[in-house]
Image (tube, rainbow, N blue to C red; front, side, top):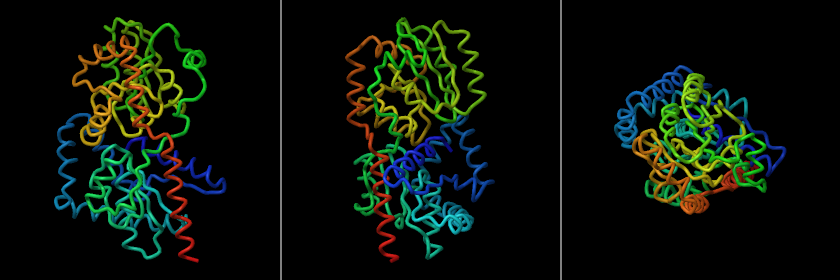
Length: 369
């Protein structure tokens, strides 16, 4: 559920290969592998809920933090998935398993209880807040976004030495390179005489991107928009239709591998605050306008980003245009947001997470020897 969890996994894989070019990594969607029917029901149900009745998802999200109310179902789901993962683990024989989503983290925690030969497990929390579903007493290590998340986990009983606050892993390309913004825009064939506004709805293309595009039509500052619709054909069609009716240039894209180039080329990113998108934007030092965060984790992410000064949240789509105009016209305001992003960014998170994983693998091999 969400492309960001795969992005974090792939960022760590790349960092591990830099430590040891001979390392073998495999990225698996554990629910699709072990419980495909459950995976489809849960993911489809989640998407429909956040689109149509987000208040219900908010209620479920917060209620699920009270473990006594969801304990039996969660235990059954984890045991069911863990049993089905047995064949995969026996075939791959991993030195360590890394989980970038709370559900497989719980399944692997249950796997360790069920099987004596289970490998160590590391959980990588991909938001700026942690849900109770992540927390298990037999997970060997956690990678979290920052000290505030680490403190919460320690307060909930996780041993301090098991939690490393090195940030959310992102690809190294999101760090700003030597190429100037002007040269980058020329390479991407973006206009040099307009502000570039990047609109994103996450890898799944969730969010009212077409409505946002129409809402920005009244902005007096000269803008051009790049809209990344993600892996959502319906969203791409709506974006293309909306582009015909607005008075500024629009480039509509589906899922792209070089999103870091578009972040570096942009003056402002308009997005919902998914954990990976936020982490990537912070490392890219692009100011964020947050619109329509999903209930639960994204609302918490928005709070952290706004409190730090790296983002501005608008409560309604009507507020988005004036907020964008103010940021574009206020050069110092943009620079303050960039400076706040630099303070919050963790560009080396993937490398530090890979270092933790490598140390745990070495320790395991020493114990086995």
